[in-house]
Amino acid sequence: MSSVPDRGEFLGHPKGLFLLFGTELWERFSYYAMRAILVLYLVDKVTSDGGFGLGWTNASALKLYGWFTGLVYITPILGGWLADNHLGQRRAIIIGGALMAAGHFMLGTPHAWIPGMEQQAFFLGLAFLIAGNGLFKPNISTMVGDLYQQGDHRRDGAFTIFYMGINVGAFLSGIVVGSVVAAYDGNWQMGFITAGIGMLLSLVIQLMFARKLLGDVGVVPSAKASKAMRKNAKDHEPLTPEERDRIKVIFIMGVFTIIFWAGFEQAGGLMNIYANEFTNRVIGSFTVPTTWFQSLNPLFIVLFAPVFAALWVKMGDREPTSPVKFGLGLVLLGVGFLFMVGATLQQGGDATVKTSMVWLVGAYFFHTMGELCLSPIGLSMVTKLAPLRLLSLMMGIWFGFTGLANYVAGWVGSFIGHGDTESQVNNALSIFGGIAITAAIAGIVMWLMAGRLVDWMHGAEGAAAHPDTDDEMRVTGSHEAMPEKHPAN
Image 1: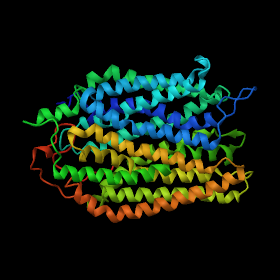
Image 2 (image 1 turned 135 degrees about the vertical axis):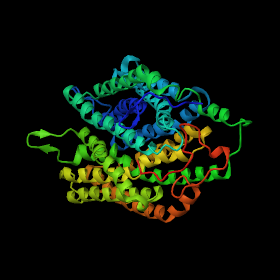
Image 3 (image 1 turned 120 degrees about the vertical axis):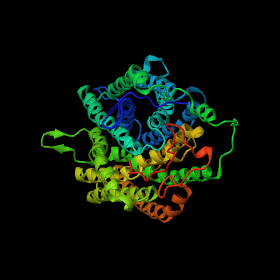
Image 4 (image 1 turned 90 degrees about the vertical axis):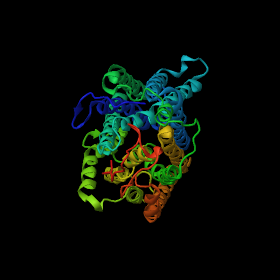
């Protein structure tokens, strides 16, 4: 069973939290670099005068982007199971980080290093990134919860800090990688190498400080820890009725998570292409790099996450429940896409018209406000509701919902089509409008279901419940023994 190390505190939290903050910061730097440049690299034409890219169509690039990002978030199901039962979270993130670094450097080197197998070399690099993410992603998130004793009300605040680390890395990636690509005359592969360097930094930070700041947190597989703390436990002990209800909540809210991220992830696909081809990015004599728009979302996160956390606390008993916040997040996503509808209406079907950057900034702003109502809350919710012996697996499944959403996002974005640019503008209008309507309807349905979902949480949110079974007595770093009304992030 993991023990919470007594290594001192910083800003009221264990110092280990800030180690995980730094590790995840550079891992997210590497992922959001891919999010910013993969589609642009795929659609860029290879020319004799210095073009760097594969020359794919927009639709084909968006489909591959959907497959890649989808698999990145599906594989954590397997990575979580391996960590729970065999590797432990600590070892899983080291192996995953090494695979991801290798994948970036494969993409960053000329694909002809395997003569006659250039395409295979490209896909091999993607495969390493996907496998590495599967091991890394679910396990570092669960280790955040492992730092806190049962009943510690700092846990949600810890996820706010952790989530800010994610977004600092995301913000830096768009600016840094975009600037590197520009400095090398549009060579997208230099961006992949830069992302690989970020991943190496993540590994070095973890290897240097993990033992000192984390103790044995994440070393023992959680399934073994769960069995050790329950006397006479069987290898395949059935779930209790309350555990089944709580897992049911995770799956139901996961469906709505798919809807949210399927719209939100147009940022790296269709909205990325729209910014590149149909947006006036010139300010005076300076042309804003397309990749910089990817940094708007994490910038807004860093600025407004503390505001949201303080708002929930200030509301006290009037604070919305997690399902209500999910519904609000979906509605805000829809509002953001109304800005993209406005951008396409400004074009009036004429692809030669370049739209104002204000539309994109507005869309990213409202998408971010929606994300703050949904994403950090989901992470915290899983650590509270999932049974200990299934913790990393359930976190992997939660990310798996995002994986399905990313695939759907690529599929939806591909409807922009292969035709002329005027047709693509009209198709974009239909896609943006359809997402706005779908998100709003889903938000209303989520709000209507909120009361029943809170009941199925059995005291993990709302009125405190008094656990009376061994399964509800949470071991260190998995759940809270006495449920709390959490201040969002």
